[in-house]
View 1 (cartoon, rainbow, N blue to C red):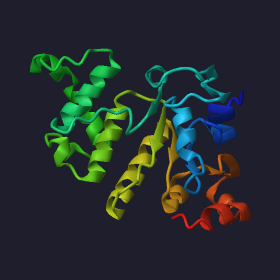
View 2: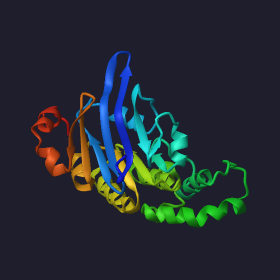
View 3: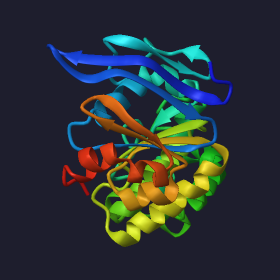
View 4: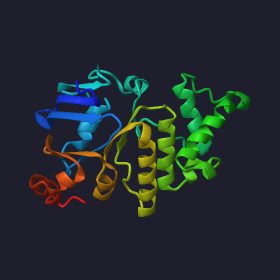
Length: 251
């Protein structure tokens, strides 16, 4: 194992009734990095991401996290190891306030059951830590606002806060900027940069300007295979990437 790696995939393959969506992919994510997965539509990004986060089981290959084989583990089990997928795994309840949502996530991390009928006095023990997490994602002034009343970008920030409540060492983000206005993109980009200072981030992202500004390393997929890998300057000049990615008319 690469001593600097936190997550590794070796020979990862996924077939769907004869169609090979991910084909013998090797991937190494370095500890403390922001690593992006990009590629044209149909490249296999989502399938690879689902394999790495254990929402799909591979046909062949192996996945190791912190040197431990997690190939056959379930999402909840790897979350307990510190590998957490945001937006899918985070619990955001629309009719609860931002503070209440983060408080629920803190209960989950500490193994407490979701006893919504508990007294406010019992639940309030989580208030200080929940408020701190809201501050981390820039939502202090929205702590008493219901999640359903938050703007789209702030809902995403709240989802990140609930994920951070699980205290992940590695955070996996699935298209964090999808559907966002430019102002929200800038806010969430700054948030990702800030929270990456003491954790590793792997993200699938379509917005190339976001990828260029945030990522230390980029893996480009095409037709289920790794086409190129490196920093943005290197991959953006690779003729194969230009042909497969830019030539595909992908923004």
